[in-house]
Image 1: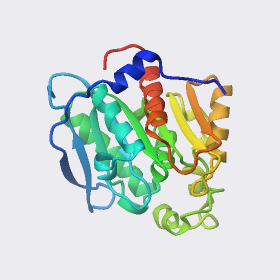
Image 2: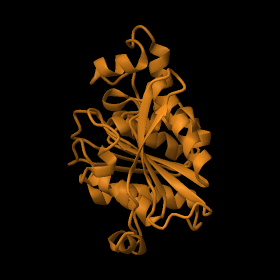
Image 3: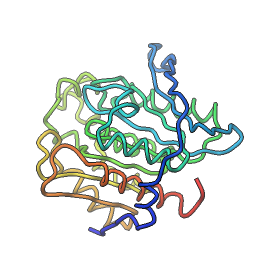
Image 4: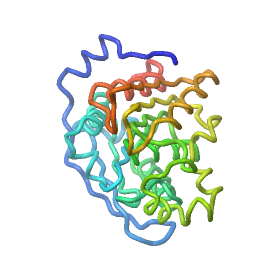
Length: 268
């Protein structure tokens, strides 16, 4: 696997004071897929100018959490996502995507498509980046595989890329996907990023650990290896001593890799 690292300049940028945010906006909307009221949080840079194009980071929370996790939680994965968006002057979006038991089922997918369209309608938006951990790490891979034209880069922390082999949280996944693996195997395959490597034309960063028992790393490691063989822009940060979490430094490095690879020196 090709090794990628933050340059000294990027580490310096990560340690420099970050631009301030405006107040978070908790936005309610009517989901087109079923008419229910859903929510997402939007953070705009304090110096937000509606005439200026901004890129967007969409952060997807983990199992048992909601839209506020990636807005308020001090854990490294969440703080690194906020800081990356602030450092690059991006709009920061954190959706419920059907809240605590989503796993990017059809309704969550439809909600995220609608949210991205809404953000593009209200703001001058350039590229859209996805980041998430655990359930969110699986969900960003699923969404990117299903909608590669909507995504400029993906950073997945401690997720799965294969729902057919994944065995945990099956009650929540069954509810989200609309049935069991035995009942709707093609739906589980459709939402398993490992089966669709050709969709990943955008830069991808994956962090995983050998000690992760909650979301075993095998499928994301295989996906990263296939993407490397295909000549795609991919970072795999795999640590033998990592469990089911990625620290601030490794999450920040993953996000910077994706952003820099996608922007290609462009000023965000």
